[in-house]
Structure formats: structure tokens, C-alpha cells
Length: 344
Image (cartoon, rainbow, N blue to C red; front, side, top):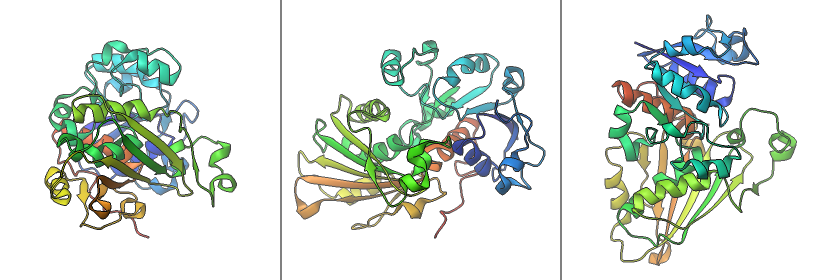
């Protein structure tokens, strides 16, 4: 049994960590922090967790208490993990950061996209990008994990087989992506109000989104060189889910694309390549740590279309964070993550 802490436990990713960890046989949540809700019981704020965390209360962040944990999750806005991660690592605690603080390897690029200097650049070389389907062995040995973002997870998983096989034009990749409103976080924002988001859909960040450099970095690793990516996210009137429609121009005869995808992900416990001709739905992954994929070649032409769906709060955040924890501590990779998706 290991002890874990959660920094920033009142947001959607924080409560999702708690929900999933309640089913984990090898983990005890020792501390959960919130400056604004210190002293409040977890089950008081989240009645769905009654019977699981009745003795756990939110507390002020305390480096000594968190440093006594085997691992600490950061479910915080960008910039927060910079201040504490180094101190916790020095105490021997492993850090799993769900924010964007350690995803980009270039501190200057991070500062350009997030509007502030990177406060812990000395840790960037050590941080391991926590996409198990690419970096499983490095994750097992890591002390600091940068959990991928939700859009980047769906886009990278959908394009990995094509890029690794050198089948598409790397200069002209298109990612047309849709997200539910929980992707914007739990904080009150006018665009997320029901009267604003319901019965409507809109694009945003078309000129440049913070996830763009992260996706380009990961795709570049798979392609072994720079990629040209057009990434357009959209807000859709649903609570959870990411749907990514990905377009690539084939540069040669790809052979059997279905077989390519099935073979690439055959050993991956949380990637489901659906039968040929399928169109995966976001509701089929709701609450589950799985990415469902389908690959199409319309009219046997020179365009390949990949459809990828995930739950943005699970495989796109908290579930993937726990998948990383399982690898780091030698647990079964399915621990805490075995429940099927919720339908309807």
C-alpha cells in the first residue's frame, strides 16, 4: 500500500482522481489540499464520495505532509507545480503533474504560450512525458511525470501508427477536435454556462491554442522530425468527452491500414482499435480510461481519416495519471481503471 497526496483537489480532475483511486487496491489518499476549502470534508463537497473518504478533509498545502507521501498528484492550474515539485522530489516523493508545467521541453516556448517565465526549468530534462503508449519504460523509472493534455492524448494516439510507419505527409496534418465543457475546468466562466454552451457549437483557438506546441512536440517525436499541424478545437454541448477527427495525406500505398493500427496497439490495454468501418462515439468511453480509434480511407484515395474518442477527464487526465502511477510503482496497469464506460 502506498500513500498519495493530491494538490488542488476541488476541481474536476481532482475529484476524478478521488473517484478512480477509491477503487485502487494499493493506494491510500493521505492528503488533499485546497486553500479555498481548507477544513471542509471531501464527502461534504462531493456527496458521490460518501462512504469512501468520510475522514478526509481538504487542507492547506504543507510540503512536509506531502513530502511524506510516496507520490503526489498536482491537479492545479499552470504554474503551481513549479513551486513545489522540486522540494517534493528532494524529499523522495514522486510527482505526477496533470497541469502543463512540465509538458514542453523548451522553457522559452512554455513561457511564450503561458505568459509567464518557467519557474523550474532545471526539472525539464528529468520530466517524462506520461503517454504510456510511447514512453512506458521511461515512465516506470521516472520521478517526475508530465501527464499529457486531453486533446494531445487523442491526437497523438490517433496519428502514431501513421507517423511511425512514415505513411503521411508530415507537413500537412489536420486535427479537427471537439471537447465537452469540463475541459474548461470547474471555475465559473460565462462561456461554460448552460444557457451559453447548450444547443450550440463553436470553434476557438483557431489561430493558436496552448495544446498546439505539445501536440507538435509529441508528433515530431513519432515522426523523428518537425511536423506541420493545423489544430482547431471546438466546444460542444456535452459534459465529458473528446472527439478528434484527424486527416493525413498518404505519401505511398499504405497497405492494410486496419492491420497497421491493430498491430501497433495490440499490446496496449487502454487503446481499442474498432472494426473496419466503425465510427466511435464519445459516450462509449464516458468514465473509462480508454481511447477508441477507427481508421478510414475514403474512396481508397490519398487521404486517411482517423477518428479518436476519449473521456477528457479520464484517459485525457486523471485516469492516465493513475495509469502512470501504476507503472511507476509496479502495480497492475489496470488497477483502479478496470471499470467499463458508462452508458447511457
